[in-house]
Amino acid sequence: MEPTNLFHFTFPELEAWVTARGHAPFRARQLWRWLWHRGELDLAAMTDLAKDFRAELAELAPLRLPTIAHIHWSQDGTVKFLLHLADGAQVETVLIPDEERFTQCLSSQVGCPMGCTFCATGAMGLWRNMTGGEIAAQVLVARRWAATHLPERPITNLVFMGMGEPMLNWPQVHRALSILTHPDGLNFSRRRITISTCGIPGTLEHLAAADLALPALSLHAPTQELRALLMPKAARWELSALMEALRRYPLRPRERFTIEYLLLGGVNDSPAHARDLVRLLSHLKCKVNLITYNPVPGAAYASPRPEDVLAFEDLLRRKGFTVTLRKSKGQDIAAACGQLAIGEPCHGQA
Image 1: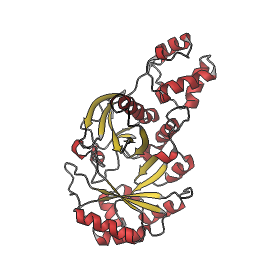
Image 2: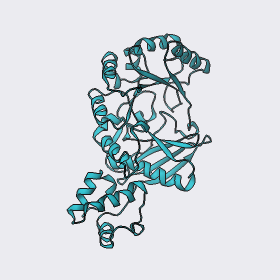
Image 3: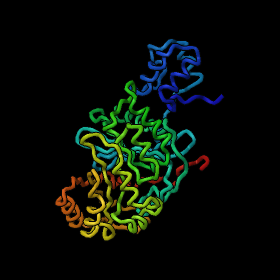
Image 4: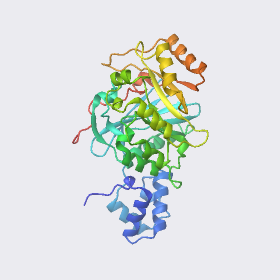
């Protein structure tokens, strides 16, 4: 019989699995806390569980997380993990330092089907969707590593900005969110989780209904024509319809949509592009996160000039927008935005 992977269960599923084997429901909560709150893999350490229950777990459900195949350290403190999943698939996840904490960048697919022309992950194509348990387990793996190597830096924020388009794997991303936010486990607040999407028709409603994370839009172009050149698959959703969907999104008081805009040298970074962006976003409750392009092998783009970045940012600010310029981290280890890619992402079936 195939072993059960308990890390793939949501809490209600774990409770059903435990009670189906004749154990009291409170045993599921105890076990969940050991797995997701403490990150414990040694059944012998779970001393408040009955010995016969631990013996049954050892036989039916050996505890295994994705394994760390390689760790890259950046000079700026960024840490990138190459993880092996159970079937041999490989994904990357990144710890991004910010003062005394980490933000973790999570992957949701092995590869990505969107094919954005500036993105190394998009050049891989899609190998498969990750399961909800695999997505959430990235946090446990990184947290266990950080507890030993950098215990003074907790992982406090999560961003779904790694490999894959989260909303094309929404059922499993939703499962991951239910695991990550469970109060007896990792207990992340929705305000500390951001789902970044390039805009998939009919999916924003799911994100809003779940109410487990904050939304961000990977826009990167202020006109339909330019977006179609840079992001041909994402641009199948017309910008006018996309903006209308964003306007309808039920934000809480004082919340705003985050608009992510990647500045490509000589492509979308001129004052004219900034004015187009102002017109596009003028009726949207949003803030703009500017990102300078990180070079990707084989992509026909260059980083923007610093003076063009400052001029773009200044124009938006003068028009009343809240603007942040994301400091690029991890470039020296190909861990920055758009750089995640695996040469051989899956040794199993694609």
